[in-house]
Each structure stands twice: as C-alpha cells, then as structure tokens.
Picture 1 (cartoon, helix red, strand yellow):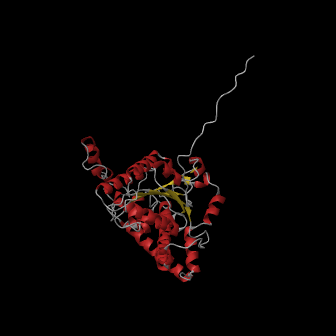
Picture 2: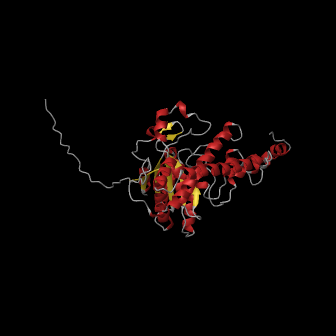
Picture 3: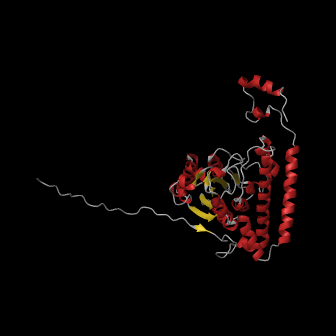
Length: 368
C-alpha cells in the first residue's frame, strides 16, 4: 500500500496592526492619589464645586425615586453610583458643544441649562420636560444607542460649517451591542468627525451582565474597528473622567477627530423603577460596589486636604435638599396639559386621518 507524504508547509504571516488600551485613574477607591493630578484638580475650589454637583445629583435622584414610588412620577432611571461620570463629562464640555445623552446623565444636564423640574416633567410624561433652556443639546434618548447617530449627524453639520465645536454622546455598556453604535463609530472615523463617545460601563444592560454581552476585553477597543482611539478610565474617579473627556474634546474641537472613552463604574440601583435587580444580581456584588462609591471617594480626598469638613457636608445636604424640594414643588404645581398634547407634540399639523380623534380628545376632560 502506497503512502502519500504531506508537502504542506506552514505559511508565514506578518502583523499588520496592533493596539493597546490605556487605563487611567487618579484617585483610588478610598480617595488616595495614585499619580500626580492634572492642573484643574490641584485647585480645591474646583473640586468642591464638582463635589457639590455630585451630591445634588444624588439628592435629586433619591427624591425622584420616592416620587415614583408614591405615584407622582412615571418610570424613572436612577443614576445612583454614576455621578462621577456625568458630572465629569459636563464639567469638561464647552458651552457651545452639543450633548447627546441617553437617559440618566442628569449630572451633565444640570450643568447645561436643564432644570430638575424639566427632568421630572420628562419622566412624568410631559413633553415640556424636553423644552429646556439649552436649545442646541439633544433631549434624553430612550431608544438604545440611537443618540450616537444623532450625535454623528450634528458633528458632520459642524464640520461642514467649519465650526470649532464638539459633540459628546453618552451611552451605557449595553448600547455598544447595538448596530447604531457601530455605524456611528464607523462614520465618525471615516469622516474624522468632531465627536467624543463616552461609554458609561455600569456592568449591566438591564439584566444582562457585561460578560454575556461581549467577549472583548474592553469596550474601549470597539473604537479600533472604526479607526479611532479608545481608552478606559475609572468612572468612579471624577478627576479621571473630567481629564480624559476634556482632552478628547479639545482634540475634536481642533480637527483632531473622534475619540471613545469607556468609563468603568457600577449601577447601584435597579435599571429603572420598573425593574427589580434583585432577581438577577447578587447582593454581595452590589455591596462590594458600594466600596467604590464615587462621592465618598472625592469626599475622602477633600477631607485629607483639609478642604472639607463634616459641618460643610451637613450644610451641603441641607441646601441640596432645599433645591430639590423647590424643583419638586414647581413640578407638582405645573398646570397639566390638555389631552390633545399626545398629538400636538407628534405632528406639526394633525393629519386628516386623525382629525376626528383629535376632536374627541379636545373635548375629553383629563383625569387628575
């Protein structure tokens, strides 16, 4: 019996591309510096200002949940544990930049002309909540990842007009599993758009953990496929978030192109008030995440600097509660809109096919 000797040879290959993902942290979980701080963070007054915003955001968040539980607000998406990401992003932005949020970036919005009562109105089903003072920012976007496409379109408009501005779009880890995200990243890289993608990686896409969403080592590396740089930051470190986003914005505003920043944090509350995370998430995981609380971290650092005291903390909690209570009163006292509002905000002029329905709505009394 004849045997055939294999003549195949091992093919040679060369590496055509490589990439690395950097991770940045300035304050560790207990508020101790891990490296020299950027210039803005050497000023205690600026850190105190941002710390106050984080506490106000959490105070507002706690009250909004209470309003929902007592039937005074619709389904609400909590930002508990993610305050450093939102406040850091907002602090890095220029007034003329454009913000394209998802639906829990209150710490950004409160810095950009959106009032707490606007946010409450939005979650209360009142379209007037999207009619806030800053007319060039986008309203909250509930459909997952579609805000990235809106942001890319706005960035292209800026580019065509030769404007030195940037667009910042924020979404969660789950949004990076959507086709909209990949399309926006791809076109932003291809067109060198002035846009910054911030992925708030809070580890859970409703009940789906990060490990079940992707086999990527990082979400930041998803930027590489679009030809743009990606990096990670400690999302519970306000200084790291603000620094990275500010650098990316300056690059974008000066024709340096897009960037993607993955901010690693944790969702300490349910996905929304319509969710019960206890059904799918181990309580020990949440307890461990509380040890990395972004507010406690910055407070510890300020107290180590002797720039913050217990008396100042108590005064801040009191004034924050007063601000939130005033906003809630304004929201609750707002005159209800007519029943026709469900069509008024949907169409510039009501289509003929809906005229009869509109007429019926106009004579329908709204229940309390």
